[in-house]
Image (cartoon, rainbow, N blue to C red; front, side, top):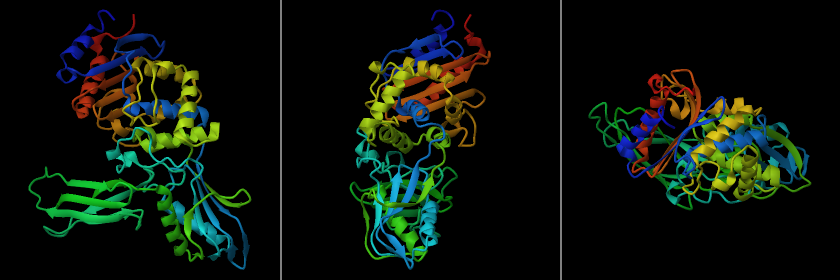
Length: 465
């Protein structure tokens, strides 16, 4: 560590926002894997969404790059004279990419099968996973946000960001001061009850900020939207996680059946598809290698938890966090991670209990370069300074001018960044920077970026001699 890294140590010691905080740093040669520098490199720290590096890699390794999640239609009766004498089953197998348009197409399939009347129930089957909706360490006050949405095997997303189990609110200011804003929902639904308390206020300057708070009550779908929006404001988008995604999908499916003039005589309810049922149709998601783009670049927590449950279901026959995390840890061990040095509690990194040493992350990032799925993993990492959000992702407004491919992470008191970069001298490095115990995690990104730019600058002479 002598000489070439002393200036980095000085920077860390002089950074006032790091006083009383923990700065875990690990730097390796990308070519040799040699550890070049570390500060608290073997100390267990909260990774935040850097946990997704592990989850995406294990998903690609175990499930495969071409793996697809499915949504299926089944019946348990016969079709005679355009009448289904039995029940219709909508079976979910964890697909987070299901949209309203896909649900409409499923209803159209029923119509095209010659079914005009269902003389039975419409049943939503989410038993591919267990019925535990939230990961064990999710804070109660996060559960109504899109990043804390409930996990179900039968779920739906509002758009191609694929924030499953959520509804997008499009908020438009009123036409004059004092009027309520208007709120449109995507997908269109009556599943949530909106109380609109947003007032349209005067636009005093171009610096006016919209001040909107969205809260869903615990245990139901009563949503309160309050605050102010300037008269000249453009449309604002907010998201809210629903209570019970399965029933939300069923509400949308019922609407779609009516749209195609398919009547059902029974009820819409949840249940399990019987073994003797007949499959009518399978709708597949995009491949996992493509799902990893929004998962990693947009840091989609729901995808991380779905992958964990899918690992448990496919490998151990149980779609639960417990079984999925067992598969995750077993695979990480095979990929060179010393699991005895870690605490892993979920797939997204939202847990404040998960702990990983920075040196384990960089060792892992070096090791996986020889895996056949590495290109898909590398392609999923956010790219510094790239404005296209499906390329730059959470780094689209950071580290411009540098060649950086890395995963961001932020939870309360924590800011992290781990991945790959090239110095101005042309050296390829692997790095993990994990800042913990920050007074304000929003300060973390600028500190990390300062560190990365410092290392990348030619004057640091970081090339291994």
